[in-house]
Length: 70
Image 1 (tube, helix red, strand yellow):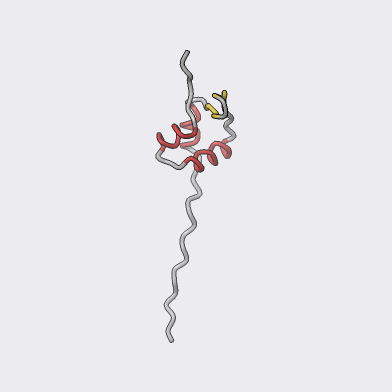
Image 2: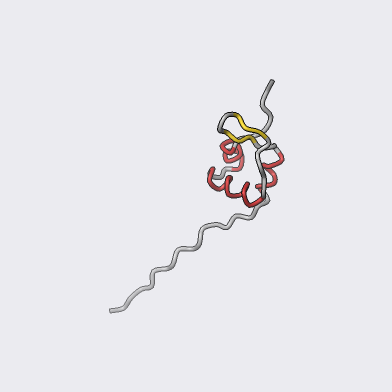
C-alpha cells in the first residue's frame, strides 16, 4: 500500500522554495495535513497548487546607503 500525498520537503523541491516558505504558505492558505507518517505531515496533492497561488511577501528592499559628504 503506497502513501499518497506530499511532504513539505517534496513540495519545497517541486516549487523551488524553502521549507519554511512552504510551511508559511500552507498556514496562510489554511491547508491541513490529510495524514501523518510518524512525525511527518502528509498533504493532499492539491495543496501544491493551492500554495503556488498564495502570494509571497518577498523580502523588504535593503535601504540604500546614502553618500555622506564631509
